[in-house]
Structures are given as C-alpha cells and as structure tokens.
Length: 385
Image (cartoon, rainbow, N blue to C red; front, top):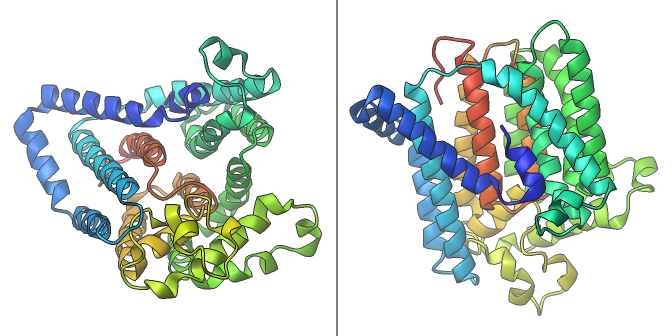
C-alpha cells in the first residue's frame, strides 16, 4: 500500500517491495497452512493455461536473444520478466490459501494515497527538500513514476472507503490526486487520470457489458496498433492539437510510426527482445530520421512487442489478455466499474510511456493486483487469481 509513497523517494522501489511482500506472503501461508498445501496450490497455478502461455512467452524472448542486436539488455529483460512471473506465481499461491481482511484496505490505503499526493505536490513545489535530505536529486521528473502509481491506485482507494463520509473523502481523493498528477511532469499520469475520470461513469452505465467492451478494445488496439499509429494525430481534434507541444503527442506518433514501418523486416519472430534499443544503429542507413529510433524503446507496449517479438509474441500476449478479461466475469458488479477503470488507466500508460519489460512497472502492477485480489476475495467466497 505504501509503494506509491515510497516511489516519491525512490523511483525503482516497487521491485524490492514486491519481493518483500511475496516472501512475507509465502512465509505466512507456510506457517498457517503448511508447505504441502502451498506447494499443491503453486503446482495448480503453474499448470494453468495462463502460466503455460507465460512460459511460452519467456521461451520466445529467450530464443530471440539469438538474433537481437542488444544481447545483454535482452538477457536482462528476459530474466526480469521471468523473475516477475515467478513472484506473481508465488504470491498468488500464498494468497490463494490465506484468508484476507479488507479492514486494512479500508483504513490505510485511502489515507496513504492522499498523503502521497500531498507529498508529490509539496516535493515539486518546494524543489524536493525531503529527497534532498536523503541524498536524492531534486528534478521534478523524478516524481513522475510516483504520480503514475497514485493514479493507478485511485479507483481501488475509492472502493475501499467506508460509508458515511465516503462521498466527501472520494471527492477529496480525486481532487488531491488530480492536483498531484498535473503538478508532475508526467503526461502519462495526467492522461491516465483523465481516462480514469471519463471511463468510470461509462463502465457504470455499461455494467457487466463493460468487461467485453473494454476487452475487445484492448485486444483490437493491441493487435492492430501498427495500422493505427500512422493515423493517431488525425484522431486529435484540431482545436486541441494546436495547444499540444510536439514533444507531447506529435513525437510519440512519429516514433510509433517509424517502428511500425520496420515491422515488415521481421514480421513473425520480430527483431529480438530489446532490439528497439539499437534501432537507430540498426537502421542508420534507412530513410527514417534517427531522432525517431533512438529512444531506447517505442514508448508503446504494443509497438515494442510487435517490433521485438513479432506476430508470435503478439499472439501469446493477446491470449493472456483474453484469459485476463474472461476471468473478470466473477468480479462483483458493484466494484467492476472501478476495476475496469484501473485496467483502462494501466493500458493507457502502457501504450504511451514505459518500456514493455521494465521490472518496476510489472512489480507495481503485481502489488496493485494483490490489493485488488484482497478486496475481491473479501467480498465473495472464492476468487481465482
């Protein structure tokens, strides 16, 4: 729960926190239920369709190291994703045999979220005095990941709030998180915040239908992203485009389009994991401006998977995405809009910002997923992780 707060001080704290939480969960499960039950649960999860597809994805990434032009980075990314998947499996196995309580969620999470938002604003406004005391740099962009984290945690915190003063607290939470997002330099956090506010009432109206609507949109945008990116700017109204700096949306559209234009060179297996890091060097003799290929990755999850792992990688992750949305059919309808808003915000950040294999991102999502599972399991008899 405190991860967003800690991310103000350290941008990469999510990974060690996820490791610590996983170790704690496994230790509690082993103490309460015994090793045999924990092991059988782990084996059951490891034999699931999702786990098999994850294994195939890791093997796909590992095989692509043979032809990637960024071998060391490719090895690191494959190991990072493998480690994150192992943490997912262990934490979910422990979670499955434990009995969660949502009391801590209700009391602590909203308070931490508001405190984090205030902390972000104060550090930016006063040029990071606390970070300075701890030896950290004062640049505002170092709070960007924390801004993203609190936006992603917002819908869950709103769900966790108790009745009574809930309406006032929800309004205060949205206001403070919004101020923090727009005080930061993270355009991803700002966009995710706006998407969250817009999508929540939509999913409230759609009710159960929201799951297949969002699932269809996510899958379609993922699979057809290479065809969509050349037309991104045409979707932005002229009145809005005039006020957007080129470094905000325009350059992203050009980066995505540049990578999309290279997919025909390796359409099935891709250029290899993390090959986008070397795209500028690999295609220095092409007609594509070097500016659009030198950013380390396309800043778009879908485009990075297409470029690095090709149609095979896209098919594997699309299958995982389908299983994820199919699993949401057991979610209670009263919390479904908040959950779908979270998923929408996550997908929004993924397709405009961070690298596809960054460990801090996957660990942040792992911690957020565990908190959601605790909330869901406390509301019904059984929840499949």
